[in-house]
Length: 92
Image (tube, rainbow, N blue to C red; front, top):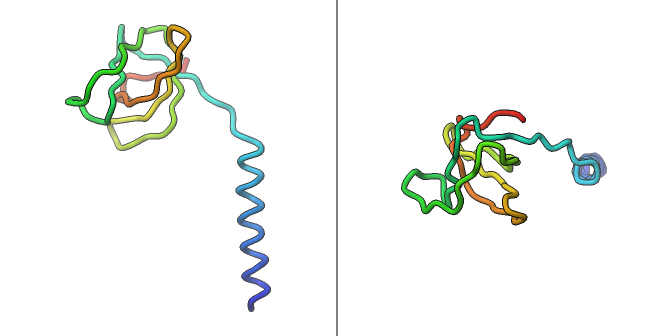
């Protein structure tokens, strides 16, 4: 029984290693409104870090809940991370 446990642990570690070494293709999104607020936390009350322009490229890091998405934005030759309302993003 102990050997089967070792084999399944090895298989899990091997799969994680393959996933890290072969990342999935990144999908680029854009705001579907004229501008979008990048916020410091997933809340309308959170501080606005940046106003994202309509033609800016946005990479979704993860969906936080039904409304908010954590994203990375490259704008003005700088990288910014924060939160946006996911309903205002569309695939480029």
